[in-house]
Image (cartoon, rainbow, N blue to C red; front, side):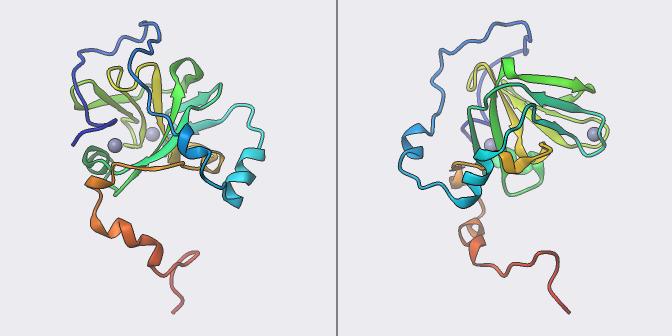
Length: 182
Ligand SMILES: [Zn+2]
Ligand SMILES: [Zn+2]
C-alpha cells in the first residue's frame, strides 16, 4: 500500500507550480551499469523517435513526449493493481516539461492523498499519474498507452511485495502468439 503510486499528502495539483526536485528521485543508474542489455533493448535504443505519442483506447485523449524519459518500470503495488484491474502497470517517468497533452480532457481519480490517476472519462483508459510529493516534476505515463511501447523497455519490477504470488512464475507458463492450437 505504499510506494510511488500509493502515497501521501497533497491537496490540489497546481499545474503552474514550478518544477521542484527536493525529493530524491528513484534512479536505476547503479543497476543499469550491471545489467547486460537484451537484444530487444538494444534494438529499441537504436530507434529514433522524434516525438513519441500515446493515446487512450477511444482516441479522445492524446499526449506527446517531447524530451528524454527518466526511467521505465513495472509497478505491482496494490493501488496500481486495483485501479488498472490488472496485476501490474508499466510506467514511464517523464519530466513535466517534456509531457504535453495534445488532445482531450482526462479525468482524475485520486487513489490516495496526493496521488492523481488521470484517465479518459469516455473509455476508461488509465493514461498517466502525478504525485508531486513523491515524484516532483514527473509525469508517470502508462507505457501501454504509447503508440510504441517497445521504445521504452522496463528496467525494473517494482513493489513485488504486493504482487500475486504467481507473478514469480509467469515465465514458466506455456506461450502462444495468439491462442493455443485446437
Ligand atoms: Zn478514451
Ligand atoms: Zn503502483
